Length: 436
Image 1 (spheres, one colour):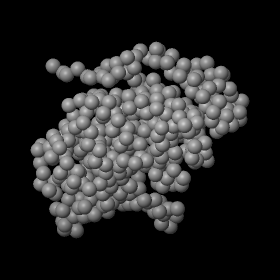
Image 2 (spheres, helix red, strand yellow):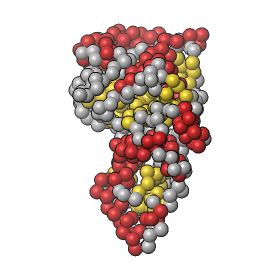
Image 3 (cartoon, one colour):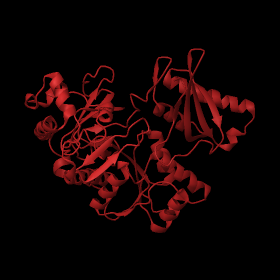
Image 4 (cartoon, one colour):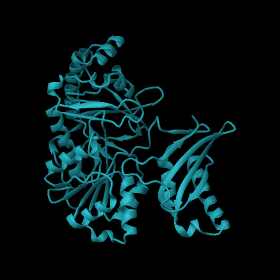
């Protein structure tokens, strides 16, 4: 007999859709009044559109509202998008700022409480209970990931090990000695841990790990299989971004049929990334999010640049929330090679299906004689790397043919020796575009 799915907040997570839409509309109206009264950026946007907060009478009117982009946040750095005075802000986080000024976000006490609630929801959906010892290998600091999972774990009643990122040997020692049962990190760092386990001859079955909550970067179903097989756990996905809240926007249940979006706190749309047009249900496009309960840092139609699809049928777990597919990449990180749209996850899925390829790769994009060239550098096991040249060439041909069948594009494959590609403790850096 199947174990019943545990749900943290059945009232919110299993609410009939029409009732939830009424909640969304009421909260959206309150949010529009908040930003119209207190956020100059939105005051200007509304004025340019001739829109007033009271003009919205139905969720179907959401297309009347302006988009918010990361550029808006940069132009209002650091606190220009805040909707409350600083005396009400109890927490400040920000992005890394690797592409310019960091994005600064703020939280009121109620924002923190809501954030904790939403992380507790997806952790419960993934199977975490008050019996677990949660090993958080996200970096603590201005990054939202570690703190979001930390407070969510405590709300569930689990024990928390705030080890942070890096020092993989120490991570393994702690996992063994403290009996960590739930692992929180990026999927790429999960593979780094798996590599280190194998090098040290540690049997994953000797660990207490049973569930992994992986996020902060796109990853494929093939990588899920890799993580589950090599770490001996159930691997679940979750979604968040600092600009909208952090982790907790959505997360998978044990059905693994998409990430349940907390629709009582966010409105999710799918748009055409080129035209901004709202696409019909079931379409693949760019995810746009509107916050409904954020006090300090409300977001109206924030363009996430993440490419995905939403499903609205009721999940087998009983939740009625919309489910978001794994992100297929980002519209702004998407590679266009000879007019063909290429996402790194497409390449990852192919590589993970080929015996001999290791789960570490990077993409080198260049332009030679006005022609775009994509080189896929992939680690292979020692046997293949040291094979005779003829056998190696045959293996390369096999990989290139499989990539062509998926991408519709010829790419160059370069085999590199095991452990030669840099391992990452945070988000993996996969793409190096040298065409600029």
